[in-house]
Length: 148
Figure 1 (cartoon, rainbow, N blue to C red):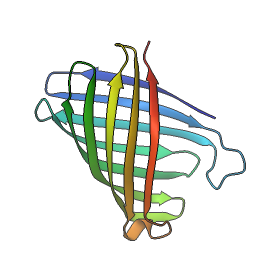
Figure 2 (figure 1 turned 90 degrees about the vertical axis):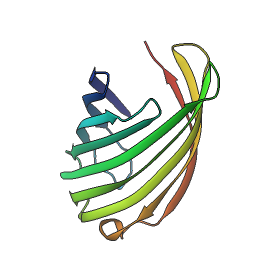
Figure 3 (figure 1 turned 180 degrees about the vertical axis):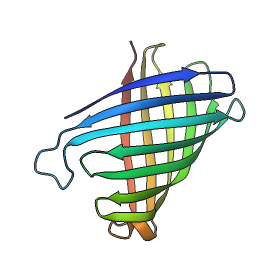
């Protein structure tokens, strides 16, 4: 079970916000808690963004930070392709500290209307020194989004 709330401020060249995410796990290595995550995004161009975020996870009693670049390109009025790539750092996050991983994700989004969209995606995470306890991964999924 999880849920989140986000408060954002959008300007022409930048945006900033804070997200609070509640996590409740059953029979998992991960601990129940709340992530508090402020972030800042600089909109370099219409297609490119640079983002920095820092989160504190009360379940892990640790910090997680990331730096990433994102690119997107419209493929028509109702769809676009997007990619993001970045790196993360951890501090006392499930007993890990240091440079955690390098990651990337590629997705295709189709907007059924202004409130409903679906995004199939594929991604990877390559562990670095701080993330040595977890294996490199390749993943895929579908994100379904409804905005009110």
